[in-house]
Image 1 (tube, rainbow, N blue to C red):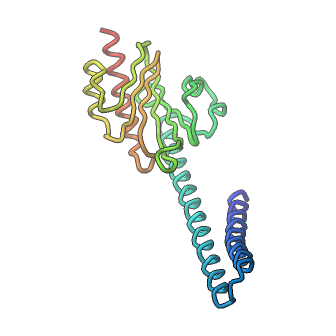
Image 2: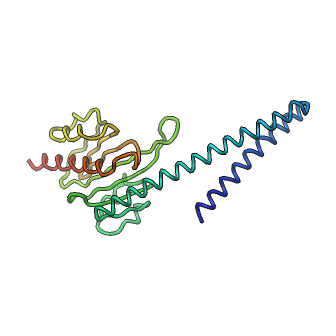
Length: 218
């Protein structure tokens, strides 16, 4: 029902754009005293341009919805494999999860699970990025010990001591940022599943978390 309503709204908006463009050109042309020989093609061209713009906007919305659905399916499947839960609101999580209480755990699609004994969260979100909105994914891992805060771009991973820096070097190059704060590791990626190999990203984050905790226990 919601999808049908959205499609109807998009069609109506497209019709308004086409009609409004043509009407504007017609009014301006009449005020300028243009002859029908000039005015009629101008109105037709304006209507065609409005139609192209409306089509592109509708196609972009369909593409965005498809990507959202693909990411939602990927996160739900991942959560199912790891005794977890997938939601679109942090408040909707039930059970003894701690990551949904993190102020950073927000986004369009969220999931938690327990791979290899670690509580892991996944957040997919969009944010202004250059000329438009970029898609980003953050992997959260609940650490077993508290750590001093560290924040570094992936290329500056040497700010972390070994063996953590070595584990970070093994991550995908689409890592944007790595943060450690108290008992929380956050690894920020550019892109959403399915563009990202979610399982591999989580496995890499867990290895970094294990190295952090191992180094702390020494």
